[in-house]
Image (cartoon, rainbow, N blue to C red; front, side):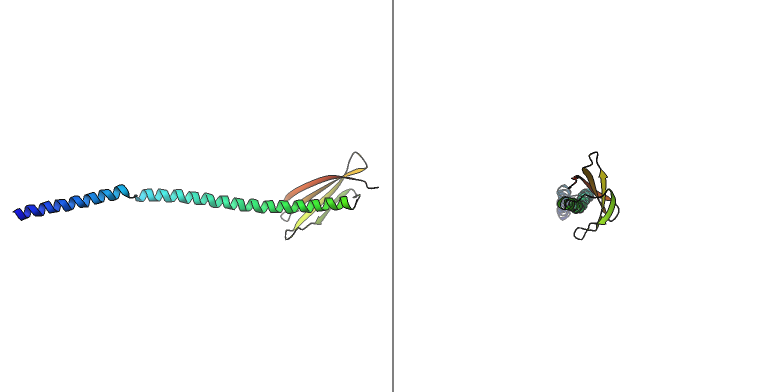
Length: 143
């Protein structure tokens, strides 16, 4: 009988140790739900950062196209100034490729109220037909 009581006490102690270990595990660990919520939060943050990086890349490309278009338009306007050209009224279109970027320039010469001046507008268009930029300047008659 004494051995039965000793066994019973030993079993109680083992059960008590096992329960305290389980309780400690629950207190110090994370539940599956907590881990899943954390994964959703991290995944959302990563998706947002990838979207931001994609946007920055697109902005960089757009800035490059705008810069090249500005150079093309400024080149034509500078050519008119340096050659003291008196451009004829009307419209014309020509290729104005910059580097590896194919662009099309559309030049329009418009009369001004003062007959000694003409307004030159150079519009740069991308290959997809999208207007990238328009620069304008007034040119004096060199005569």
